[in-house]
Image 1 (cartoon, one colour):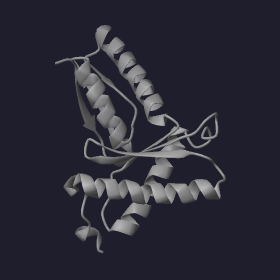
Image 2 (cartoon, helix red, strand yellow):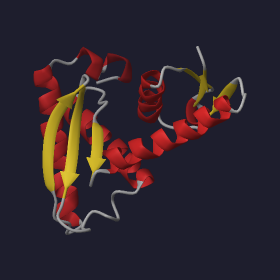
Image 3 (spheres, one colour):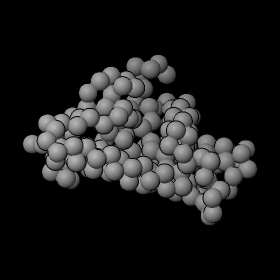
Image 4 (cartoon, one colour):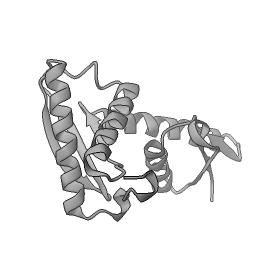
Length: 164
């Protein structure tokens, strides 16, 4: 299927997203088997996206739960899903609670930016991050009664926070 013919996840029904999660889980199970890593997979649909989490007892997933590794595995999984379904995937992969850990890190970044605003700055910029992380930042900023906008292109895209 040509790139311009690919259906996007935003057009997908819950049933489509559940299928996307199943395909992703199959891919990840094979990958974990190859790496001889034990893990339990949980599938969900959240905010219009398939959400796949990998959990394990102990520190069996510690090597895979680093942010850059999770991002790379998520992209590989999205490509595997797209190859199998013909649809562009926006699935989210969480390994060993990595997404909760990253959210706490982003909350700390926002707190530091708010401190700059409290000290008189008119705005505070955060480092470049993925679209998913920027979405989390926008949600955190909104919850704190502030405003945020994204600027830049591609890997340089970042968020700027200011007061209303």
